[in-house]
Image (cartoon, rainbow, N blue to C red; front, top):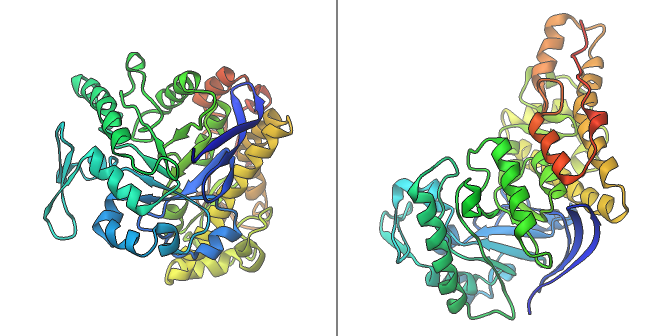
Length: 414
């Protein structure tokens, strides 16, 4: 068996575990950055190790197109090809049914794509997806599922659910490396609770109330002795909520994609480094952050870079992934040490309180116009000033008392 999952601590639904994979022993909850074609844009694998990355996600569809799974296999597998000693997970290619739907035709046989590289048709069957992933050699491989947008309703949802169940049998039969690679299954079913939607296709445009309820339903039904993976989720608040509800693993392009747009993740929300208010700010991105970027560079310097130089995106990607890895470690340790409710409350309170601390820095002697610009540069995850109702409802189901965070805050007066 290529996977061991040992729960080390719990608080109600939340759990911290040791996930042993062929290439690395991981701690959950964990966040996986997305390296679609075997690379996290702008960062080396040494840097990813340095910030504590445990698993990198690659995409079967894109790797099969370029450089091809045959070449990766010939050169020793994706670990060796990209010089990554820790764990890898490959997506099945199913998500491209949604993201590239105008190029795809879905039938019982599989998915026929029009290649965005040369325009030629490419048939991806459950068997072919597994064969490609066997050649790539990731620690965790995903079954091909019939992915539909969560906003779709009607018979197409039920069709996708039953087809995905039929395809998982074909994936299991095609899997030739069960002692070296772990095959994860995915269940579809939309937002209809009767169809038992699994955690494999959220973050596709559904409202937050539906989002957390689906996660809660699935974590309650999925096996206790297996990791639970919420695909495509990368907002820090969503990860904290899902972890409270019993999920273990997450992936998303968000931290690195938002970095390329000049935005940093900070405890109170996000910091927009392209904003004019950053031009002469001598502070680091986050005074509480110990990453290489915050130790060595000012907001003003990064502001100068993100508007003109690729180095700005690289520095922000490093910082944002450091933030996500620290969040993962903090979730794990707080559950193991029996202080998870305190961690959740502190996490939420920082979003409520630290925004006001950030703004108070500029309270005097700067004019009102400049302070309003600063407010635009610092965006709270709670723009209305209080914890959203969906978070309160989710935490109630998770058994986490956040009443101390539910006081309404108002912005400091000029």
